[in-house]
Length: 336
Image 1 (spheres, helix red, strand yellow):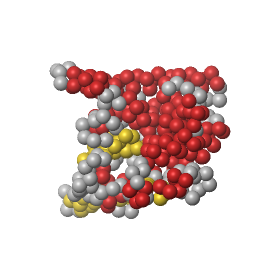
Image 2 (image 1 turned 90 degrees about the horizontal axis):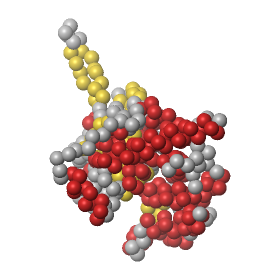
Image 3 (image 1 turned 45 degrees about the horizontal axis):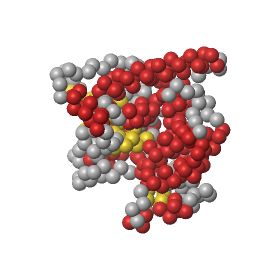
Image 4 (image 1 turned 120 degrees about the vertical axis):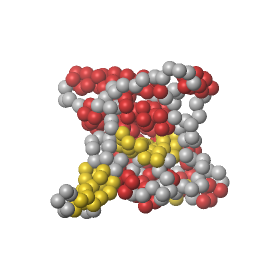
């Protein structure tokens, strides 16, 4: 963001218009689900990865594929299955023979070498295969046969997960969950949206998508996000919210101390700091507000906390714990 307030405002306005165009374009394919679309766009604007959780048939795959087209990113899709191996994601070395009889190894890149990787039903792969993404998601490079290989920029992982069917699945390890900037819960559409869906998808006309961004302009937008100012009161609000979600921490409520066995780490505060900026920009504002913190608390914290057995037995749910945290730390400020 420029130091010149007028130029900075022009940059914000230009990006806001492009984002509005991108959202309108996506609405042609993904009907309803505005909150899900916005949170997915925010995740990419922050330079992060997203975990979309919802039952089958709610357009999770369609959203990721459409987002890749609208953002102008080269994307690959990997269908995670129990027999998927790390080499199926990262790539492998093959021995090739030349015409003169000499032999040499050549590395064939896997699908992870793209700008937008869709990990479909990520929890169906074994922990060994899931761990193949850890380095890529955090460091944006992979190590194969002792050699570092950089991934394209930007690099994002959007993974999908079915929360209902657990047979033949492997829970994602905490280290991998923490690398997802947001968990985006995809709910059933309301009646009007479902009516629009069946009318739009059972006819002969199909909406066409076109690119609104490209890789360079998306990287510029991500840099602009990091330059947006955040008021001290918002920073303290983020710290209070995240730290009070840790059992035993000063400021933790009785509910947190009773129900939560482990809470969010510093990555949660980092993610929230970026996400509130992205939400402000998405709505054309120059700085985030308490409402942004309140709205994004759930998708940022939900996958970074765990309930104890006794809490689950009492039917305490994480969403209720997070709601209590928001009311205690933000309260009426979010409505102001």
